[in-house]
Length: 535
Image 1 (cartoon, rainbow, N blue to C red):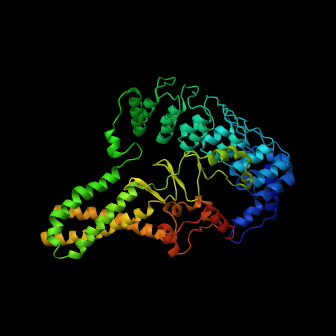
Image 2 (cartoon, one colour):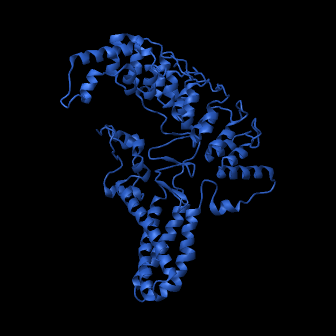
Image 3 (tube, one colour):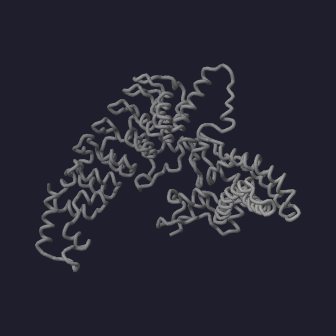
């Protein structure tokens, strides 16, 4: 090949010079780069545009459509890496940008770009004349491959560009089948909303519901069961129903959900699910909450009333008054944190519909940006800044902090102040309880109930103290737990160099005022305008 010849030629010239490094015969990396320069494939993999240009100038544009030992071209490697500058250079060279690999699957560059969700690369390829519905040897289009790898935004872009929804691979699976099989709930919902038929069978007689039951994603199963006309008892070619597939793979939460739904469909009487009332629905258990309530109400309070109060009140009367006061604060703040809407957004907004219809016309694609990154395809809304979709509650939450199983609710904008009061009061009560436990041990000795009690209170105190300190710290800096952990995902938390920058941090006093709703938070437009001047 020309690339190998060029590499040999440069290597030979370097060898004739006979240069060596100062450290014996082993050359340093810089000298090795001079003696053995990158070939065209390595240059495209690493995004080294200058080296690609040099090789094209030396060997001609034909080097861009040569094959490596695995049967792939430089165009494939540049597309896989998302190197838009190299892809544009290749388009300018007037080469075939829809060339197939020489291997069993015979993928094309647009398919490799779809694997990693490189929308900007796909956009350039489509502008160069590549067919949006071009297939590989298995009949997979770019849309199908994007759904195989969970590339939701690219799938939305391709559908907006006119990709044919009815196309299937050679096994009869379309994009919806693959999204359901891989367990991508948000993508599955987008495809159903965009017109895919959730009742369509593949060559094995399996619907998307069958495949979702195989994947084990409960949210996808629930969403598909809610669609009109979806048959829960339909059998595939092997006589397996969705329930049997879920049970065979030990997806107990899905099997439980399907059994209850089938029982409800066949029953003419209203159903009362005692287990769900006590422990919560599948995927949203109340076990941590019940564990906390049991330890406080069934174990903690009886010990306090019958032992700690009569034996230690004379020694620590003020601590007992403080303990009783903080218990009132704890239960009231718990009730408010548990019952208050944390900031759930209404589903199915018109703004979302308009954004989906205009998906293919956004200029941001050409700049390598993702204009759909703020869309939630489950709630069908355009998410404001600081909003996140909670997988447990299955709702988008305003100023999402985290989902707390001990209050059986999300912590968001409207209940976060009650949450911080709750964890702080639990921490204070835990410290006082430890004092009472130590006093009881000194008075009556090491009884098993005291030892067990102090172990439990240390456990809850450790959690509560950590949560309260972290929550107060987050409030002081005006940042949520989700933002602090996942700040790399959010553009509004980065400066021009990609480093962490919090535009909401405007001083401790003002941060606390916003946290406790004394003053309103800044608008999204104001935050975006502020970032314009941050370097």
